[in-house]
Figure 1: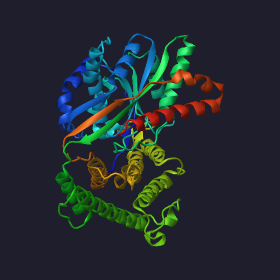
Figure 2: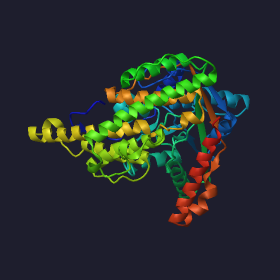
Figure 3: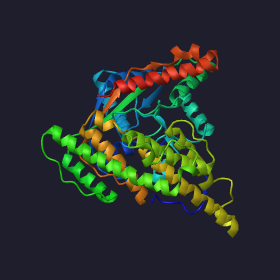
Figure 4: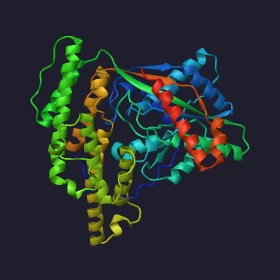
Length: 472
């Protein structure tokens, strides 16, 4: 089972951004190793090639930013934890080359401020928080609606910061290169807040958002390594191990798909049985999940949605949260409620508490941590789509889905950081899309509240359209 926190912890204070050019330089120098080797347990790595499409568009935007003509926001795709390293490579390696070839003058360092989840140092270690803050990052509690303390810092940097600003509109990783997750409206809102602040200051700067797509590809499609990983999963689930498929490419992919389907169905069977025994339907708020004998045999995608809903409702019922919004939004609310019971800024230091107060606080933290496991399980499966592989049986889609299943099982096994196996060398493809001029939506935004909502929705749709258009 995922590691349970047994003692109440000190409150989660924001991590102050303290940009340090020396730290940035050291990270930039280490990029070739960081991209290829797993120097940190939370990095899958194994990337030996990064291609940049339309890099000149970004170089021109950086030049305009450095000339004081624009404020710039980069809306990055967030596929997995390798994305920030690819972004750093883009800024430190690719962008200078593009600018030099196009004779676009740029000043060093080429860098960005950015938002990151306050929970990252909890699973990645305090050193990760230290590095992110020295790179100019702002910690954000995603479940805290809204986290005004962090947002005020972000708004200040958006208007007056030394660098452009980078945000992931998906909010978190989804593990799928070819599937865009639901986009949060925060990126568009940040853009309009920046326009508003500039107009109040009577500054002529315009505000641009540039969507940046990221897609990963495996080189040489190492099917034998994928087969080995599937064998490990079969052992963990209690299935007989299947031999490496043989035959034509069509026969190979068909056999791999059937194998993946068997793993998925067996895994869901066990989770459904677990929730049926431990959390009967009558004891939870949602009736979306009927027991297998009551619903026949629905498609895998429906069963995954059902499992996600049931796991979230179990946690929500404990914390007294109504099940509303997308699964991602529900996960963030549960996480925030758990954090308020585990990381207690309202308590005196542990040494100052009497034995009874410590015991009760620890009990509350343990209960919250245990219930949050249900959310983590749901989080592992939110990105899994039953038809993702069926629609396109590429090695990348097989690998991504299998690795998501590996993550879920590793977390339940108790791994704090799932040590993902490397299936082979990968290449990353970063696509710089055309800028979105936020000022062109300003008139609609400032009319009234409904106009603002429409303008934010329009910009969010434009970002999504650009990111989807960068997929190949």
